[in-house]
Amino acid sequence: MHTKTSLALFVAFFMAQAAAADQSDLRVAVMKADESLFAAVFDSCDTAAVAALTVEDFEFIHDKWGQIAKSRDEFVKAISGSCERQKQGTDFKATRRLINSSIAIYRMKDYGALQTGEHQFYRVEKDGTLSPTEYAKFTHLWREEKGRLLLAKVISYAHIDGSRPGGTQ
Image (tube, rainbow, N blue to C red):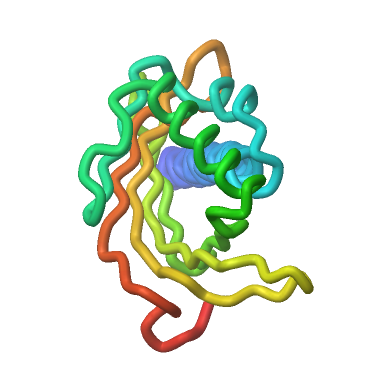
C-alpha cells in the first residue's frame, strides 16, 4: 500500500509539473504574440506584420466605438489610416503598456488561448516622454494556426480617459 501511495504521489507531482510548464509555455507564447502585435501597431506601423499576426476573420469590438473591424483586412486598413494620419500630423503617435499584474491567460482546448488584462495608452511627446491618454480592460482570443498564435477576437472595454484608477501599474 505504501508503494502504491508513493507512486501515485510521484505521478501526481510530475503531472502537476508538466501542467505548470505547459501553462508557462502558453503564457510566454501569448505574451510574445501580444508584444509583437502591439509593436507593429504602435511602434513601427508595420501593417504587413499586423496582417501576419491576425486571422482572416478577425473581429474587434470597442465599448466606445462599436465594431471596429469584421475582418483582418478592415483592421489592417484602420491601422494603415491611423499611421498615415500620424505621418500627416493629424493624429499623435501613441503607445500601449500592459499592466502586467492584471494579465491572465487560459488555454482554450483545440483552439488557442484567452488573454484578459488591463492596459494604459500614452501619447508619445516629441521629446519622447509619455502622457497618459486612456486606460482600458481587454479580452483577446488567440487562435493557434500552424503552430503560431494569431489574434482572432478583441473586446476592449471600461475605457477611462487619462490614467488608470489608482495610477499604479
